[in-house]
Amino acid sequence: TERSDSANHVNAGLHAQYLSPRRLQVRRSAFSPRGAQCPPDHVRMKLCLGVLPRALTRLAGGGTRHDLRAPRATEVEFHRRRSGAGSGSANHVNAGLHAQYRSPGQLQVRSSAFRRSGAVAIRGGPVLQRRPGVAALLSALLLAAALPWRGQAAEPAVGQRTVTDMAGRQLTIPATIRSVYSTSPMGDILMYTLAPQRAAGVSVRRSADEQRFLLDSYAALPVLGGWYGKDTTGNPEVIIKAKPDIVLSMGQHANLDLSAVERRQSQLGLPVVMVGGELTRLDLIYRFVGALIGEEERAEVLASYCRRTLDEVGAAVATIPREERLRVYYAEGLNGLETDPQGSEHSEVLELAGGINAAVVPLVRGFGRATVSFEQLLVWNPQRIIVALDRGYADGAGNYARVTTDPSWSTVDAVRNGKVYQIPSLPNGWFDRPPSANRVIGLIWLTNLLYPEYYPIDIRAKTREFYTLFYHKTLNDAELAEVLANALAR
Image (cartoon, rainbow, N blue to C red; front, side, top):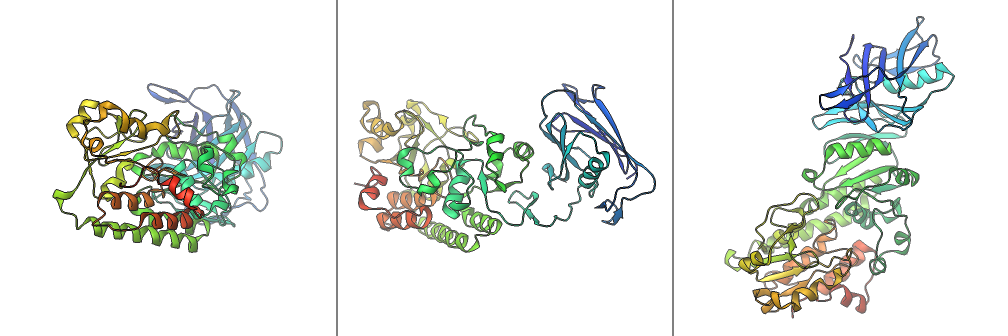
């Protein structure tokens, strides 16, 4: 490590260059169509180290410890932005550091590790203040910066531990997790079912109807916002004030923008733990998160229920002859003319339940909901229709009535034969939206609804069992009837 090539931050306006193994130059960078440039518009501070008492840190070179009380001066050149606003965070391309301006005079420097998926910050570092007291400032800079280079992971500090999340990213997190923030309703539901007392807040406000099926203490949590759905953006300032220990980002990794996850981690200054979202792996997800937050026993109960359900449904569906499989249309949107095709995470329950997705439309990643025409629907002519109640939209609760009473739908086989069903949605949709643990009871319901002779269960008893175990809610008869309204075969 004599002199490294210079490197621009990936996304945030800093440029760094090691001039020697102990000399790092950080400058402002600008971005243009040609790439990142390093303009001269910066303020220069030159810091010299004479004696740095008890400054032990781990440097490159096989992890050997070095005492930085060198008799000669060590120079560090540090350049601060002139602009009034703080920049977002950024990883060095090749120098093993991650930096974020908290304000024009505050820079947080952390070590970073490098993966195929990109650079990630792996250790919380100090916030450097531009003020008198050069030795203290330089000490903090060196302790943060002089970590193993070339992507080597550092040993976690006391009170911390290193974990590998379900996307293969290595993170340093607190040894004890007391509070968790989830970036989307998917993670909200997972945490509510597993450990509601550890939730720092929720990503979305619940309706009064939904709150009746949730614990009072959970319904009273602050709404912190999140990153999900269409154009939904969290508020880092509000989230940081809630003081979560970690951030949970749940979803199928193919549908997640890893660079966006890294950006949120940098904005929040908190480790963002990625976990999967596949229904078929929900047992593994519960066990992973349970071990992460110290709720292994509770996680095992929920994981076992999920795995048992998936195995039982899978065994039943395997016995259904192909010619007996039913064509099913998943009606979304206020007019029922939005849907998700086979292969979408939003239709995973239908595939596992043995139904044939009638929709032949392009798969829309992320939020989903491909638009269809009524002419297409007539061509598909589904044998069953399941209708989503869009409670987040005005008049969304009327979707079922519109499909079953609009004369234009009456020529569809499912409508003509009275085979239209409303997907239960209290407190969470059973089929989708969000695609989280709520789909377990949805899988039980839909498989029994489509193929009662192959999967004969008492759906009312199963509903009571699921709500008690996962939602901490004992349903009375009126609540059970409300949950299952228009959802059962007649």
